[in-house]
Length: 289
Image 1 (tube, rainbow, N blue to C red):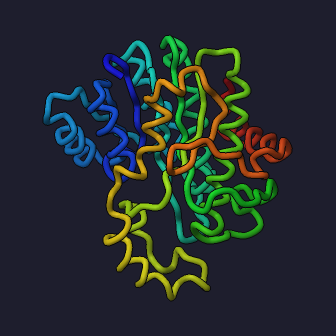
Image 2 (cartoon, rainbow, N blue to C red; image 1 turned 120 degrees about the vertical axis):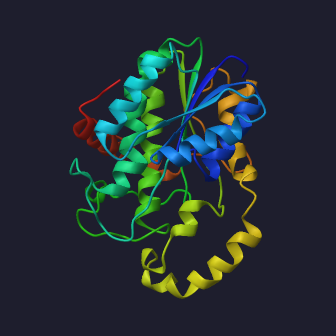
């Protein structure tokens, strides 16, 4: 990874920060991305304390304007991007729209990685063999309802539903993106990190859970810091896709929390689902690779 430029979104804490730490330790020039300037700068100082080349940018990636500003800043500072890790994820307790009029869960987990990859394609194509790594999450797989991509019919809740729904849609988008870039020297793969006691999970309220699971919230808060606090472990799947020589030139692959190849869920193999997710991303972003 020495000499390579890596951009990691959602990297001021949690799995993204540990992914950035591991790639910086391998010699990469790592650019962190967060929404809060103070946190981003503090994370860059921490990860760069041993002499690693780590810098930070701030942007609101739930908004298309923020994505465009980030891409413009990267273009001004760097002549190429060797690895883009779309680690950012997010969840809400109820349906809400961004300033662009996009449902927030879909905007953060699906549209943002789609649009940022499109916007950074010139820099990715400038690298000899660029990699895009998208992180899924929640409960792996599950059905995707093309008519409810943005909770148009009903908001389904947290991990077991709307968040998982969006993360599976992300996988469908990623599989289609890999196919669209099959003739490029740019690969697109998906990592599943497993469960971890991340800042996002720590901030989750009981109201974000479906009613049947809300009594479990105190149990999750008690067990999380004790059983799921090693964030280097869930980062290994994204680090593997970003850095392993075994993944050179390999695209359209999904790896599990052990960094082993896994089959795509049935919904992701459904071309009608891929079409619906891709069309929605194109329509909202007005971008296409």
